[in-house]
Image 1 (cartoon, rainbow, N blue to C red):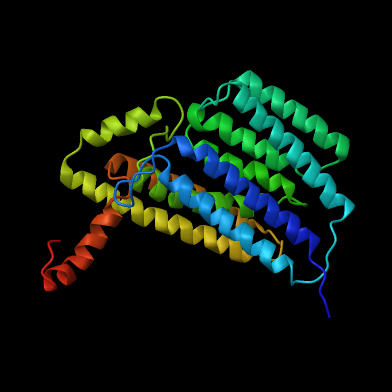
Image 2: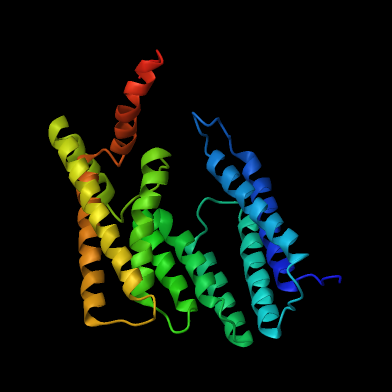
Length: 293
């Protein structure tokens, strides 16, 4: 018996594959470097290749997973996404591919996208708004506001919105992205709004090495405690139920995670202590095989 392709997965896979190809094309202007010395285009290149592999996998499974047609609601969401996303891409090209799109252009695009979404009664509006929020706030308000705000704005796409869960997810993502992009890849973007970023860096450089080390380790442990509280919130809200205890837990998680960030920044190590710990653990093994640690 011949199976009909899954139309929903076909479109999803094609969109993912198309985004990956566009991303790889745009990334050609950035130096890749190597695995040891990554250039600005190395991580985007890996991300787009991974996205392309996922898209190809979705396309392949669509051929054998049985028929599932794209409904009218899905067509509407696809249309709104393609028109709005395409308009943003064309606007970026027309402006000369700037690192930061001017505020007026972002507001015009967002207003047009909202009008389009309201006209078609689309649920994609929070996703589009989250994209605009990240693009606008990353350089202006810093990495932390951009990341957490993007997650919270996109949470409005869920019906009903579960803000507690999305707040917990954003608090988990912040230290993860902080470790990968800020600490290890050393991507130079403002971390906090205004002069806070420079203030914390100045305070960190004025401390003794011992105090810096202590603050860094304490900040890491405090952040781990905050992540544990967030996981508890996710487990307790798994059945869409929220209680006063959940609200207390998420409030405590916010305070603990902020404390972990402040201590880590005051320490000045920016979680590179994790790399030092890995080197310390594997150094006996390297010495055993005659390699310098």
